[in-house]
Image (cartoon, rainbow, N blue to C red; front, side, top):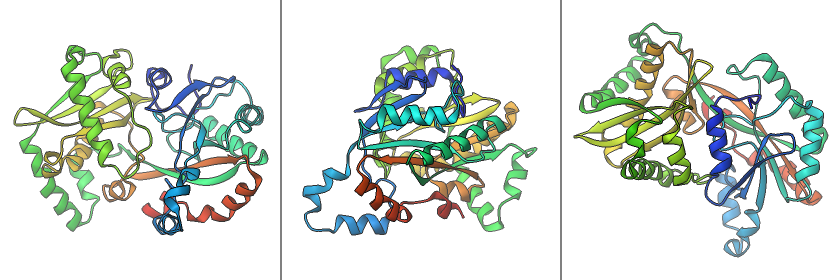
Length: 349
């Protein structure tokens, strides 16, 4: 099934439904859109000042569990956007989802609905905007979402990329990119023979865990079963860019090609070697170079670290989350507190 707003291969979505993140449950709604449930910390996207104020309230450690309700989400943590279907119109889909889940869960969130995304066609964008309006008419509260980083491959060579930066930034990047000379870089594909060795699966999963554990936000911990299927699936044709230093794997990017766009999904690193080798910066420019060589139209770089990606020349497209709170009193409170939840627009302005 091909969804509205889909920037991933079908196999990756199927993998999510079959092997959801740790502690998650995932399924398809009656209308066939992905849905999942998980324990969710409501302060995850709150700004730092508001979060600190809440954490300083009396007996916070005793009542903090009430801020971590079991929550239902429409969407998937492996997709850039909420995956919708035009098998029903937007009004019907909004009504069906509310009827199915709003009474069952105290918090119900439709996540990452795109807003006029340059990465989607006009039909998908129109449906998404209609869907947002329909959800609001059904009592959902609109919350600013995240910034998806992307780069158009509108340059003829990498020198042209660097010419777009200021002198000081260009000098800094070229200094960091000297680390590339210390790395052996290879392109693998999902389904390659090496990924049928358990030791290789274990190593790739550990590098993923390294990145997950040092991240500020811990939400969806992918399982080893998910990674095994991801790395062994030939038909989804993942492009895996690997980085070796002194014959040891120190990092990788797992990317997909959809609609002639290179979509960067997962990263694994070994610390502190990856930092010493400036691997984050090296991999950014390697991915741009690879996208150019392959004739891709865009490089889609994901949601995390928007300030860093802005400094690297990324453009951004934004989303909305639509939230339904079963308790009318809490619903009224949230409407007043929306401004305290982070907007990535402020980070990349």
